[in-house]
Image (cartoon, rainbow, N blue to C red):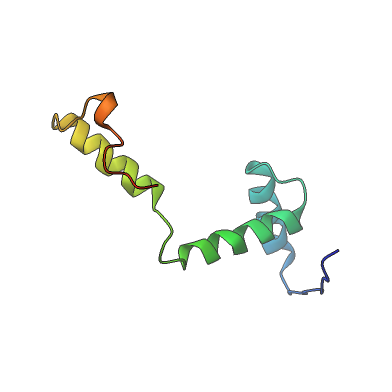
Length: 81
């Protein structure tokens, strides 16, 4: 079992309602789960090895639109992973 500690933040009623609304809109039933997800996402943004999926997809789409494509059997040539 992981040791946990409490974290208390002070919010106005309006701020709490706004955060709760955002949490529910994003599918989180518990406010704490949403806040922890935000913290994890922020930490991932600090990871220099993290891949920006949106940027990669955008670049790939632009390549495809310019006709810069590869046959499927050549797609992973040279990929050492």
